Length: 221
Image (tube, rainbow, N blue to C red):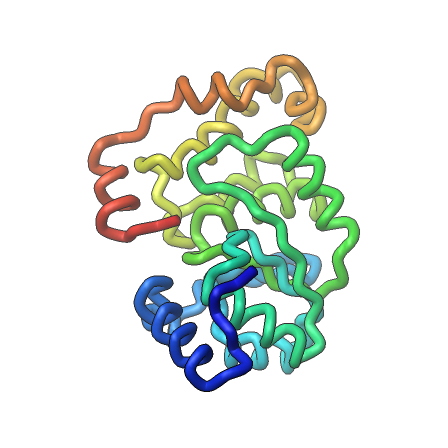
């Protein structure tokens, strides 16, 4: 249960202060890192309630929260705004520094097949988790080869592959090196014994300066 009660002026003030400071929401007042994808999907950073209202006016029907954070101030505001605006809120938690499991990848495919479009999916910065899910969306929903869909993990969207978040790139690069040349589909590879998230994460190495940039300076989730 959220510790932020939006039903009282005091609770809303506490939530807003936490959202502004601890969630760095002041950085997103005029910057949404929003990019439309084919098929009615938009990838973005954490939206403010007023930004959700603007997306609603532009036709968005579904909001996909990739962050989890169900007790956090951002989620209290997002859940409240979606309820007031008549937007469907779907929670699909992924990590920016872990190799997704086969179950998560299958669930992502099912999510893209089941939600109502136009849709907006977001993490905190719109760079890493949104990038991972955009790769999967472009592959599963739009039929792009992984090599092409991998462009969604790019500095253009503020993704930094040199840090621990580079493990997301590493997953797809392993597929392109080990399985694609053999004609194995991405989903078949993920569901095979060759796909070992624990071993892949252990094998991945991030550059020290990338870790400094992503974790210390940018303070990415």
